Length: 485
Ligand SMILES: Cc1cc2nc3c(=O)[nH]c(=O)nc-3n(C[C@H](O)[C@H](O)[C@H](O)COP(=O)(O)OP(=O)(O)OC[C@H]3O[C@@H](n4cnc5c(N)ncnc54)[C@H](O)[C@@H]3O)c2cc1C
Image (cartoon, rainbow, N blue to C red; front, side, top):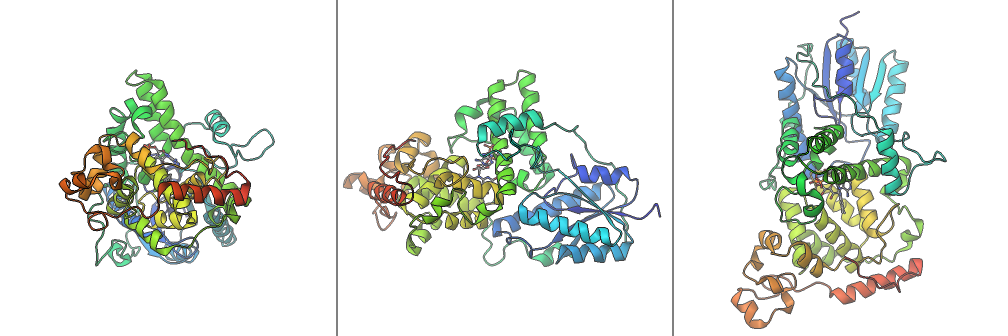
């Protein structure tokens, strides 16, 4: 009886450190059966960049388990069926997992736990993904927060940092259980392999290295530099690691707090970083409490926005061929590396939603497919933030000017020149608006607009006026012409 194994069901907690489900499984003293199930039937199918990441992260997790005498068992198909099959094969009577908090997954987990319990199997879920589980941070009336700042205050007052753990040194796993071959899942792209520019180290070691690189360097000037896409190391690039649970958000926060405590950086820099990690948390809590926001506007009046259907412009946006260098640089960075700088994400999203008046859901879907950090909650929350329709959103009339954004946040043009190399010889003065350059300047830079680089697909002022007119139809606010950056 005592040797019945515990199934440790990995999902988006692909790590051995700070893993509550693993720690609880180890405490039982029984053999552990680490399993990952590829079940693409109950939630939105993963995007292509996420599949790329998962492939490498599972290999890293398997290697880490092998170092501790274990291995990762892979199964594909309906998660409940696969768990039941494993239970039948191994005589396991316990399943431990770290919970997912997206509404579909959360309900699905509850159904699985309910069914297994009826079969006499104990099924326990833990929180390894968030600082605080949704439902634990509520306002005085017991309602979820809809505004970030009071949420942050309450979160920091409520959330308690767990002790750092490294997991058991040895993990005993039954030898005979069959596993799929990871290659047979074909998660890595073939013909064409578009991932050659993906410069990432998925897995727990990669996550820990990213944090260790960032804390002593980028974090020192984080608040000032994080908005400049060309400043190397100014952001942590932890987002895909956090999404896949290769590092606990607590680990990142503890390391930042520790560095501030040791006077290696100012407390305000650590606080800013913690606030950004808390936006991830805010997004997850919002989606958990308001599941409809994946499909509909948080503020219902925005669902009446007169979106345009314009496939040619949507395609130009996706391909980074809008004629606006900062927008195009961002979209090409995304395609090439599976990631885009946060400031530029805001600019490209604003351009799609406002200058092109294309439904934010089109942009969200493209990001979902192409981002290595594609995260249902953070993606939807941020798209609705830009669209003005979210809980604590930027007002719709805040229309980023892609030219002045470029001049302000890419003042030396390093970012644009890197991702839009056809413009590299254009002097800074015209780099963010090539169509304003005199003919001889374009000639000297070797550019014929419309041939080497597109003319703008929409004029800034016209796009802006159209967006404000559209806003007026839903909220009567289109007359507010502030153009804040
Ligand atoms: C339109 C749009 C879509 C986005 N989609 C996603 C997404 O699918 N997945 C995702 O993880 N982030 C998303 N973001 C948020 C943000 O752009 C990324 O988290 C950030 O760029 C990741 O880089 P980093 O790890 O270097 O961030 P850092 O600046 O180092 O921040 C540290 C961590 O804080 C969190 N964080 C920072 N900013 C935000 C934010 N605005 N919202 C939520 N969490 C944040 C991330 O987990 C990040 O890793 C989106 C932003 C926009 C404007």
